[in-house]
Length: 113
Image (tube, rainbow, N blue to C red; front, side, top):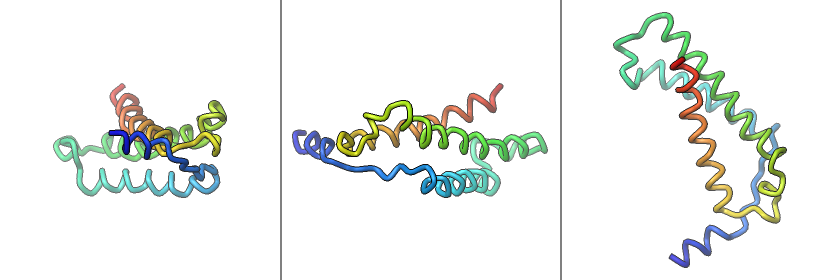
């Protein structure tokens, strides 16, 4: 357990420039939309109407908004958290976990209204 704690405290400087991460954000959103259109997970094939196609398409925009917020606004709101001299593998790991949580739950709550 001490080795894990040691590794989580190791320096891990992030490269969080928004201009460099924006192509990744767009690519991830396109991947999510294509995945949902091609494989129709979560029982979508039972209700695959024009409204559902419209919602899947907008799911990509929601993913772009959520990830852009995480990559652009969070470093502005919490500059010490994302400062290179304070950054560690554990912080980056928790930040990626936050992004995954937001990309999953924010679009679901927006589409279920």
